[in-house]
Image 1: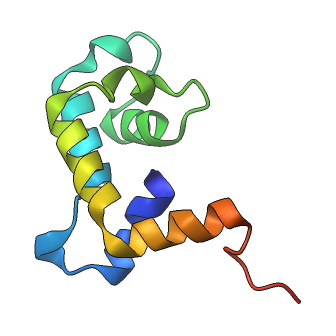
Image 2: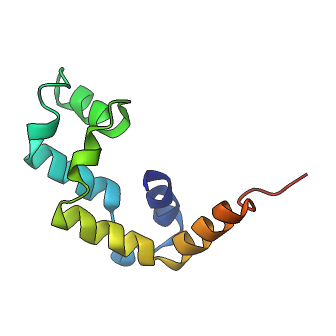
Length: 96
């Protein structure tokens, strides 16, 4: 989902974006119960760990309504739907 959100940032106007990464970060910061005892350091270190950690604490947040709405917006994005379709068919990269 993060990779699709990155693609969306490049191809979709600001008003129509899901802003999934920002929404996930905002929700995780406002509801730190699932990660605060695992991720230590200052706010920036915690932000990086929440985003990129191998322990993947974000899995506990997918059921959040705000994150779900952003994920739905991202899923409805035509450029992301087309990219997922090509990736499933094995045509996401040009073959040389």
